[in-house]
Image (cartoon, rainbow over the protein chains, first blue to last red):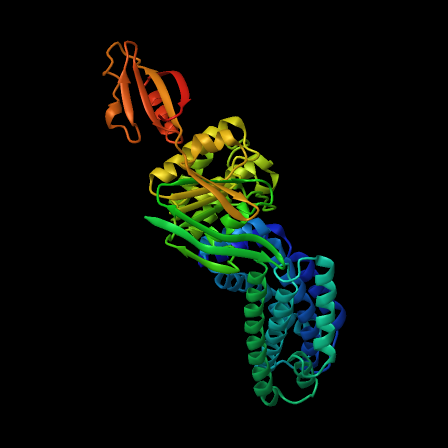
Amino acid sequence: MSALYRYLLTSVLLSQRYLPPTLIFLAAMAVGTTSDNGPLQSSYSFCVLAMLVCTTWLTVSIVNHEDPTQRQITLVMIGDSLRVLTITVAVVITWCVPLLLIGLVYPIVTGKHVVTAGDLAVGAAAQLGAAMIGIAIGLLCSRLVIPRIGVAMLTAAAAILAVLLLRWISPIRPIMTVLSNEKPAATNAVPLTLLAALAAILLTAAVLATKVLADRKE
Amino acid sequence: MEVVRLQKVSKRYGRREILADVDLRLNAGELLALVGANGSGKSTVLRLLVGLSRPSAGSVQRNADVVSYVPDVFTSHDRLSAAAYLRHMGRIRGLSTRTARGRSLELLDRLALSGGADTPMRKLSKGNAQKVALAQALLDPPQLLVLDEPWAGLDATAHSTLRELLTETAEQGAAVAFTEHSAEVVRSTATRVCELDHGRLATLRQQTALTELHLTPAGTHLNGAGVDWERHPDVLEVRRTEAGVTVLLPTGRHDAALLTALNHGWSVVTVRQVKPE
């Protein structure tokens, strides 16, 4: 398990495919949160949006990075496609950690906010939830499910719009609403934790759906 | 020992039937060649054998913990070197880093990877990438080794090395299955040949060709060259002549005997295939 994780992590690191979504995330932070002096949770609401888009892109990049023939070799070695997919998702989550840290720290460094531990915890839960939804969309739009990159891009864009515009289709819109309600972190902690847990459930469902759809192609 | 068995296996992609009622057993120590025209379903059978594909009907039973697969085309865009890639593959197999490094360098050396083990994977030619694909399959001795046209793209020297590696793997108790278009390669390597015709296992024949090797010892004494041919595995018959010996063995098993002869300083006078009586 850890050997495959190390291989995929090294392969992605050397490929530098994580750079474009990471740089776009940084640019979005610079445009959306620099010199912001409103409530910190409102800044984090913008980070949720950027995190959703960038983790979707990051996931598609990382999953599509592995050559189909290499994937066949890996599948035969491990003997379980769900385990291979889970490890791939673990690699994606690892690459999301720097984004999460940037998303938490950048608004504090560049804006004027009253910072509390509660705000940080709430921001982390909210962005983690967004990252998990982004990963779920990215998995379902990866080559494992949609082989044609053009169709995959359009589907991903449509899915991101859907989760942003439709209120109860995913936890994203409720997360952004909760962060923008100007209530203290202690009040928002419970709903945001529940929404992050819901995002984790949706990510698990996306992993299973991706496994089933990828296996059916064989 | 039966390593893998396909029972009444059919495979459909949409309405198109690729395989129909295929029954196939593969035993330990066997070298099975699957032959047939393009699109006859050979690769599908291989994918079923290793579990990459599931049958639409019928069942696949596998009795192997270490399964290795070599795809027909192996391309890698990795910036990792061939040695680093194989080290990772070895570790995924459960080998220690040290063992994986040693084994990968040994295999790459044997397969004569041009450019060296430090060449990045994405810069390897088709043939060299194929050598790395072969090496990853043999890092940990497999119980089931499946190769899709493994000779494609390999240079002439690597052809015989691959034949040796496959024969050795089978001798170590693995079941080996491969597809190949060259009748000569199939004849010299396989112990059994199955032919697929439009998704059906049309013919099944045991490879009965024999190879006769005429060898002369390096020393003056016939028995002084350190090889007891009567006890050599796979040798069916030994005939002593004035100049040396003539040994008869199944085609596909002769590479190991040739290697033994050359390693002990014997000269190979003739190698010829003979039809069994």
